[in-house]
Length: 116
Image (cartoon, rainbow, N blue to C red; front, side, top):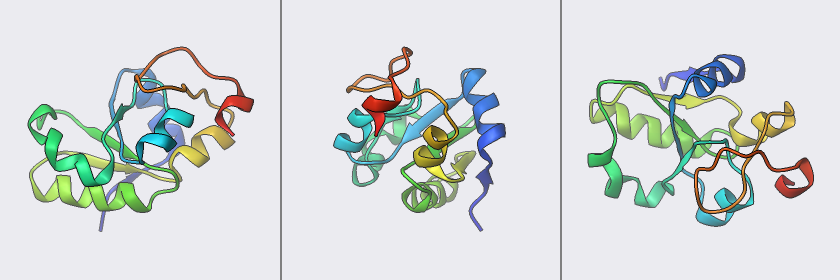
């Protein structure tokens, strides 16, 4: 079973500077992502493994939870302390939490109109 983290606990971890990896495709990421999340589309995830730490949690997010569960399973098999974010980016924005648009992880929130 893939470990999941609920939205409230994830929001707390994200606010404290957690490492967040967004495994959606580039277009989805540009349209709106969790502030600070690093883009690593699921097919490209193996290319960045050497850049991910094994000594701290990695929170994996996608749109609704399917791709992040796959990525979390892969990362855990390779020795990472990975956790899938329950409900994904959809639940994040539906809860009124901020999203950032563009290619960079960013910190400034986008308006809700920009993320929908």
